[in-house]
Image 1: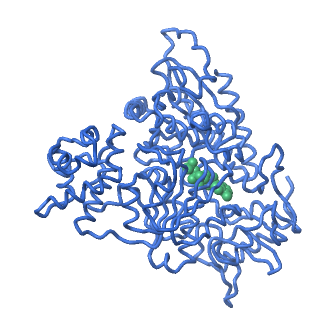
Image 2: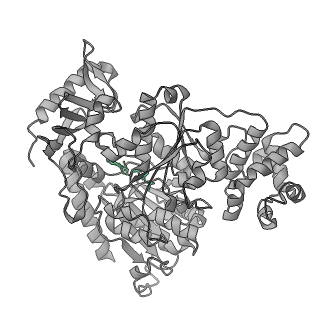
Image 3: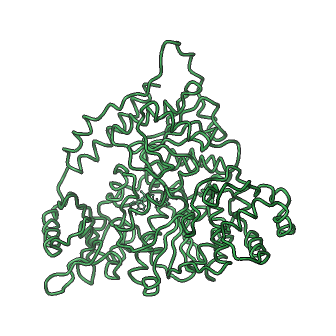
Length: 605
Ligand SMILES: Nc1ncnc2c1ncn2[C@@H]1O[C@H](COP(=O)(O)OP(=O)(O)OP(=O)(O)O)[C@@H](O)[C@H]1O
């Protein structure tokens, strides 16, 4: 491996920046890039650094002076003579990559096989193990992402694209950019909305790194009354009716028909419990079958009600109708926005009309799917624009190919532009009935032993049973439903996989996740597209549509005395050795180990 000639110079610049920051130096390295053009040479970092006389030593990534760094790339230097990414670990410069050197393409991936030409440092960033939090990408934002980040704050901007195209990363950088550059957004405050508490934890870690002061919430937590999320609608039809726009009219009539003061909780409990009241109020708005799915026996008290996310959104609407004012914000970013119901969109629009909606319509895992973004954007500001991201940063090409079979029209064409090879074709293992989860978990433990973050995804209806199995069998997993993504292996129900990312995904009984429904196929699609390296499928039932070609003959019956035990994690020592390696070498060894692991799993087959 050759050492970049500028490594020592960049180390000096880093040391100088640290010295200027003194004790106030943040956890993040003060600089990560350098750009040279006709305007001179400047360093780019997370925040401004100035010397004793007030001169700029490092410009913040969101400052106009940093623009040239992000607008230039190997295929279009845009007047830049040097674009350099400096990788720092523990106050040491460990790598220097020049995407543009002497005004031309420098240290870039080859671009063979019609693969996109990107800086090698982007490829290296993608090879890092996942950590359970959204990965850092400020140093390697691409020009098309930077362009979207800086679009005006007013109105609605939809950032759309296939799985893993960087919609969340771009939307969060946009939030931080607007907060730094737009007075109205800074003054009004930022709201970041994600669908579930699980995703809130994953995304929240990225905001402090971006120095973005934002209120981050999940949909259920928008309502600030006493009711809390305690249940989920098991029938998609119930969630669909609760989320539909006509409920706004039903609730308006409910408030008008109620003479005495009442809380939102009492009003909604009453509506669910009294079919005659609902018929009286909504005879012309909801069909009898739709009214029936809303029926619920009242619990002993409002606190005991199994409030679902859609109930809480209705409570928020009622609170508004009763005169409570929701807090207002300067701009809102909504992640996984394809899942918003009309009533959820109204709840966000009450807080802010200028919004960034990030999502992909084909990734909807909510009870309804929107065909057009206009079905949602109409609830917000008057002007609406769409921007599309098409470079795949997460999902390896073979997994992209397989996952697209779950989407009726083959999914967005742009997905073929994935930057990742991953570990090759997905592994498929047929096991004895009842063993699917145990075998997936033990394979997950083995993969985690090499440093992989593994997500084991099961059908929502099987989640409790598998979690209990883990507790009794002593299998250490993070409870993904509870938002615990810190463990090496996380157990996840398929309906909470949206937005998350793991090195490897182990799918348990995909036919059960798909369940023969369109919603189930979308759940499967989303679950498969969470991995950065490898996908493994464990099943005993026949594989669902779109996977039949992977089917293998069932294994011969097992000898009764052979007891199946989870395979122990086997690579702890190896992991200790890892820590002794330089970061650059580590990347190489990681890749080799991943290949070995894959080969060994195939041999076990
Ligand atoms: N420019 C970039 N440089 C390096 N990594 C990037 C870049 N853009 C995105 N990534 C990485 O790609 C991965 C996917 O990004 P992100 O989660 O934002 O995608 P997404 O489109 O929101 O995915 P999904 O909707 O499927 O959850 C993340 O690990 C992110 O850090």
